[in-house]
Image (tube, rainbow, N blue to C red):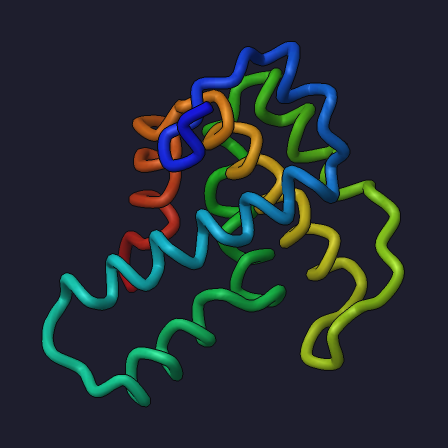
Length: 133
């Protein structure tokens, strides 16, 4: 198994829990954000951390989900909804429950796409999210 560039079958990916997919997707989303910020110029580590946190948090990810929802296929929308509806045990203090669920849906979608090796689609969606930022 190539863990850096996985190519799991959709059948195998669909066996993973939504929170498991969100766990992977959280890492994917943060890596994309960090890469984007580093490619934009020279920032101190403290600035990079502050900027990353401004993008990778439940309220910001909930807004990101709203931007891409109209662009999702039926299948992608179904994954997003299942991730959004997953039972979570706690919500961070900086977000409300709706924002946290939407962020979980977004992360589950990114994890689902990543594990299938659909990085081009992830790039398309991430580009839309980052437009005008």
